[in-house]
Structure formats: structure tokens, C-alpha cells
Length: 608
Image (cartoon, rainbow, N blue to C red; front, side, top):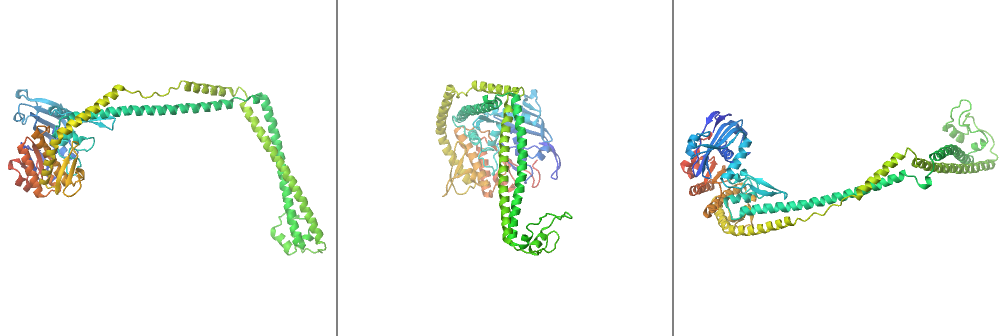
């Protein structure tokens, strides 16, 4: 690793070699001093893409990253040139052995060093590394059905989840995601169960075929519904078009000339105007008669109660002063009733009230007469109103007939309406009803064959896995207990990489429901158990590299951490497994690991 560090901690240029042991290598340094960055750089070189945990600030320090590794027995040299955290040039070299590749950054035919790939960008490097690693390790892309309509392919980065173990906080047992059956596919990297890969591919193809058949039927049903709605729309449009044409075509009884209809309309308009005038006059007469009747009723009431009113009965009853034309207000009229003063001149009203019965009788006669007049006026008004209503209706009918009459003005509209009716009738006559979805006998047979093959492979895979998983479960329980998982009676992992936990004296639990620390212990126990059993039976296709970042930080006691480190060192030593682990606990590393496996920085200093 070469570049220039910025910031407060050891700023300046650096060029740091970092050798790794064949078995376990422990990277020991204080927190935030480069331990995790080494794992992330290993990941970038081998995976092809950096993880999101790789800090952009650290990437910006780097100018060169060189990694020598043996992949599937082939020596390889990964050489990356970077600017501002992005790859500007990269090459993967191969040669006779690792020693030959040391410090070499370009092909050298004289030494037998050739280039396996070249890249000029971050994306290009990622794409080419994925193809190179899958090919060298004889791994197939992980394919699963996606939303029951298609397949989804996961390449080499998904496999790398079996190399770089997730942190304790992650709920995936293997890999980085729990969906799409990927944990179960990664389990096959550890245990290459007979027929497991074939079973997965057959199931995927079966699911996609079934989904495609379902999609075809759904599409056919949707088309049928759409066509039915289209037919209803055409029928509704035709009905409306026929109604419009009927309105434009005159009836037989209305088949009169335009001139006659126009003359009739003019005569009715005149008659309606005269009737309206008569109604106005009748309305005025009625209002006047009603006022007279109301006045007569009031006068009868006044003469019955007031002598003054009887004395003034035959006198004038002006509304205003005959001299100055000012209105006579209510106050004066009240004074006339109660104070016997004239409402016009305000003088006292004098005289003898000798014949009150005669005055009252005459007032009653006046009321009777005015009532009769009002009734006659009301009847005349009602007759005038009826005449106006009748003539109005006749006028509206005449106008409608005039609009419907056969004339040059209406002819284009009628022709357009007739053309629209004919067009819609033609569209309905040739309307194609949707066909029933055809049954594809070949496809149905293929789906049945795939289902039968999946059942057969499922039985074979299940039978072959029973003995293996029995040993795996036993190993997991023993290792997890050794690593400090409390009160553990047994565990059970299935082919989908789902782990059941059976605590002592308690009901069954799931891996995802454990604490972060317990999940990390269990995950490491699972990986070691799978590697042990896989190598014991010769069915492991794991790349042989494990990256574990700071396991003690996940709620792990020192005693449990010692057991974990010791067991990891033992597993790495007794097999071809290479483990790179990080810790900030200097004492833990020195107490549990051989000195030649420790890569340690001074306290507070950077690891590289």
C-alpha cells in the first residue's frame, strides 16, 4: 500500500508492505488505526468492488495497492493504481510462483509473467474480476426467481459474503442479505451437497416457467376485460349517436315548411307579448283592488272603535298634505284617533256622533264591495297567467319544431350524425371478441417435468444432507458453547441456511432474534463447523479465506474471546483455511496467538 495520508495522525507519504501468514493472521492496532481498512482493501482487490464500509477519505490517501495471492492454485498479483479514490489503471498478473510476482507491476514475458486482465476504471475492474474469480473457482452465478416473473443473477460479490463474515449486528447468517434464498446458496459454497446446485437451477426454471404461464393467463384475462369494456363503450356511443340523429330528424306530424313554422312562431310571439301586457294590467288591477280591500277593512275597524273616525268617515283621506305635498306621518294619524285632531291641519275634530250604526253599516258595505272587486281582479289575473303559460308552451313547441325542420342549415349536422351512426354500427359489426388463452401442451408438459425433477432432486439432496447436517449441528453447538453462547442445548441448520436455536429449558428461537454478540459467535461457529465437515467429507468448495473484523467488540468477554482466537488459529492450522482477524486488544492477541501470526502497530500508531 502506497500513498499519502492526510489529517492529524501520521500525515505524509507511506509505502507499507504487510505480509500474511498461511493460516491465521491477526491485525492488531488501536481503534481507527487502519485494521478494518486492510480487510476492505483485501476485499476490493479480490471481490472487485469495495464495500460501503470503505471510507472515501482512506481511499483518497491511496496511490497504489498491490496484493499477491494464490487463487485456486494459481499465483496472482493484483496491481491497482488510484487517483482520488478511484481506479485509473489495474492489472492482474500471473506467473510461475508468488515469489516471481513479488514487486512486479507489469507483464514480463522473460520471467513468464503475463496479464490475466487489464482495467482502466473502477467499474471495468469490478466486472472483469467477477468473471475471473468465478471461472478460476469453478463457480456458477447464483440465479433465483425474481418476483415470480423473471430470474435474478448474483455474481462473485454475492459469493464473497462467505469470505467476509458480517458483523454481529447483521441478521443474515451467511452473506449480506437474507432475501432471494441467497444464504442457502452460500451454504452450498461450504457444503457442495449432491444435486443441490442442480436442484436450485431446476426450481428457478420451474418457478419462472410457472410465473410466465400465469402472466400469460393474467394478460389474456386483462385483454378480455379491456375488450368487453371497449364493446360496452361502442354500444353506449351508438345509442347516443342514434338519439342525436333522432333529435335532428323531424317527425311526420311536424313535417311542415320552414316558412309556415316561422309564421306560426311570429304569431305566437305577438300573442304572447299581448298576453304578457294583459297579465301586467291584471296584476296592477289586482294589487289596487287588494289595497282598496285592505283600506276598507281598516276603515271598518276604525269606525267601529273611534268616534273621530266616524266623524271623518265621509271626509277625504289624503296621503299627503294638499298644500305642501308632504306625506302625513303615522304620528299625526295616531293623534287623529286618540287626540281627535285632524291629521292634515292638526285642529280639533268636532261634531255630533249621532248615527254610528249608519256609518258602520256603510263601512261594512264598502268592505264587501272591495272584497268582491278583489276576487274578480284575482280571477282575471289567474286567467291572464294561464294564458301566458299556455302561449309560452306553444311558443317553445313552435321553436323546437322550427329547429327540427328540414332546412339547409340542419342538413350538415344530420349527415354527420348519420355518418357517426353508420361508423359505430360498422365498428360493432366487425368487433372481435377476445380469444380464450390457448393451452400450450408443450409448456404444460415442461412444467410438469420440471416439478417432477425438482421433487426427485429434493429427495436426493435431503437424503444426502441428513448425515452431514447432523454432524454440522453438533459441531456448531459445541463451538458456540466454547465461544461463550450461554445456556445452549442444541442447534439445527437447514439447507436454506436458517438456524434454529434451542436454549436449555426454553422454547426454540431463531438466529435473527439473538443479541449481536450471540449472532457473531454463532456465525463464526457455523462457518468453522461447515468448513470442518465439508473438508472431512470432501464436499467443500469454499475459497479458503475468512475475514473477521473485531469480533471482541460484539459484547464478548475476554475469556470467550481467548477461546475464539485459539479455536480459529487451530482450525486455520489444521486445514488449508486462511483467516485474517482484527482486534484492538493487544494482550488478547499476544496471549492466544503465535508471535509470527501477529501484525501489530504501536499503541496509537497506524497499522500502515
